Amino acid sequence: MTDVAAVSRQERADDRRATARTGVQRLAMALFGWLVFLGIWTWGSSQFSGTVLPTPKTVALEMWSIVASGRFFSNFGWSLLKTVLGFVVAVLFGAPIGYLMGRSRYWRAFFHDGVTVSGTIPGLTYAVMALIIFGISMEGPVLAVALVSMPYIAINVAEGIRGVDQDLIKMSHAFGRSPRQIRRDVLVPSIVPFVFAGVRLAFAIAWKVEALTEVFGGRNGVGFEIRRSYQLFSIPGVLAWMFLFIAFMLLVERLLLLRLENRVLGWRPTER
Amino acid sequence: MSVEEPIGTRATLPTATPGPDTAGPTGATQGRWLTSDVGARVTSFAAGLLLWAVLGAVFDRIPGPVDAAVNLWQEFGRGEVFGNFATTLVRFFAGVAIAAVIGITAGLLVGWSKLWRAALSDIVLVGLSIPAVIWAFLTVMWFGLGWQAPFTATVLAATPFVAVNVSKGVTGISRDLRDMSRAYEVPLRRRIRDLALPAVTGYIVTGVRFGMIIGWNAVLLSEWFGSSSGVGFRARYWYDANRFGGFAAWVVLFIAFIVALDRLVLERLSRRAFAWRDTEVRTDDV
Image (cartoon, rainbow over all chains, first blue to last red; front, side, top):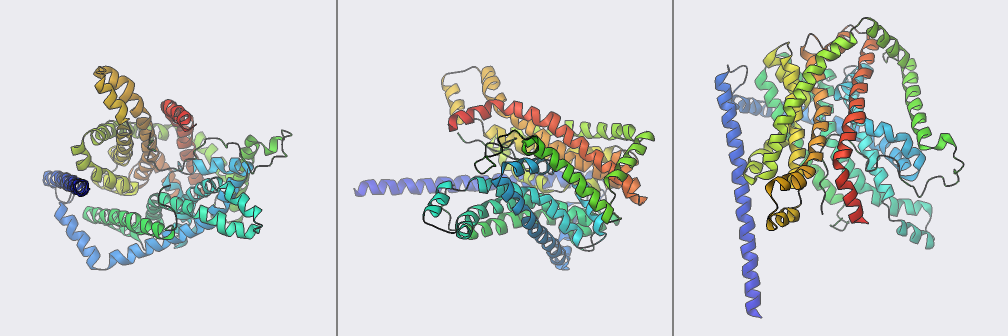
């Protein structure tokens, strides 16, 4: 008995050590990949003049000065605010559309083309349309984010509705629950995960279109700063904002949205 | 068997056409055309057009559909459409071709070898999150007003999308089948032809498809900001002249081109390339 336990403990320790070893290995490889990338970049910038391809060090210093001057937080704050507002609008309009699409075959066919085609439309269209409608403003990026992310939310809500456990609804009917109660306690909880999935799917695309709209017509935000660096013909500036943009996007995606999803949906059983 | 979904930029409905529905109008069995699927889609198109017309009529900054159509007609009359499209399409397709070559190579490496996966996957991830406008700005600053900027912007924007999808296809090859074919000493040629190629082809098509959708935006942006020819340049010309009708005409062309390419060519190719898999999954599920 004790032998078996000792062996299994030994095995488990081995397993853990093995996964740790592959983890370290993977990290080393990724680090190696980045070093090679930085090496190629440094070599490239030595081939051209510094203004064409600045060295990684120049870009890193530029990034640091952007963060230190506080422009990082103020601009990303504005961009994030516009994105969130756009998502709110998208949920307000997209969720009812998704509800209709999930409930009736007619509305599903009605919205089918619009929803599937919208992802193909180039972002330039949304950006300039928002600029034409609102001019240089706060509302332009919000509109663009809303338009881009609405289809994702609609589709996911529709899938959520179609995936609702019909037995639960039948049971609620059998126990004499009112339609309002069924909506609140059965439909909404089973749809919320799909709304989250839609938001998370849409975030990467919406975030890019938000920046693009600011490039065309913004008074503040990441896109506006990228545009300004471009107009100053500052390649280090564009590269610095680009890396900050990527870092921020991955951070929001990995940490914020995933955490929020886990917290809000903590009641769900883990395997789905 | 787990099936990896392709990574892309667009929302996709799991079923291309609306399936049987439990909550649908069950009484409408009379075959009334208006409530049929085709009827619904035609109605939605008409409703969209109507909405556009109303917006155009209410806000004088927004060009209406009639304004756009008239401008489109005039633009065809001036002979600006075909020449500019030819210029842009050469840059676009050349860029997509190079992106496909680089992306497929990178995707195969990332999918096949652990070393390459560790080294490249972060860089591909970063590449996926760079917005096309950054590539447009950088290439314009690097190359100036020539064909090189839009071409390079297309390559840079499209490559990560090809690579990530191809690598997914390679990692999705059934390990059991691979081990089994090794155990039974199936010749390498047959292993490639019957196991690897069918599994990866669909992902290559999907990757190139998403690459084209992303690349189209990149080529337009690059021409918009720094080119003296091409469709993006022409759209900007009208925008700068404050003639939004002419701009709207070009937007209609931009959307029509990419939607037609996607719907009529790429989606069909993709469906055909995935056909073996989807039928297999369906029989598995049932």
